Length: 174
Image 1 (cartoon, one colour):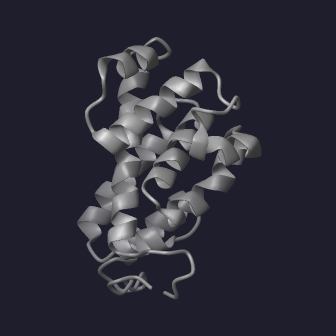
Image 2 (image 1 turned 90 degrees about the horizontal axis):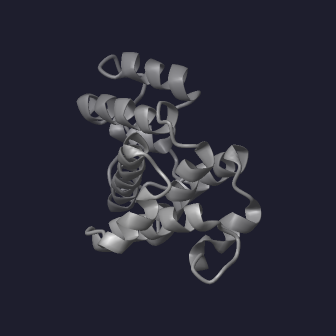
């Protein structure tokens, strides 16, 4: 159960933003229903994550691989539950999803994906990225894509930290 109540999406103060979320996302997930407790934060979050997920030049499989790895590293089950079906639709295989926990030892990922996973791990676990890790990932992406990749890792670390601090879970009643 979440640590604070979910916002009432029908209240006049948040209904216009709630309607926008429904129009853009199809429904109001638990994450956004919690964010609606602060409409300015919810609106900024929506704009930022829409840019990351829908306006980036990164391929969907890479984006979702990053999101799933961040969720795994941060022990964020809600994030993983929401993104696993998206990852499969975007081109990740079930074998790749299953191998994310031990990606270094497996053969499911090519050199580009391994460089992205190492970058994701460094950013998530250590914050500072070693030069060798950055050099490896930068061999596969141009400047725009490196910014988008970095922003994706950072954004989904933000998401998982928010979810876990407030204990937002898929099974919560709203």
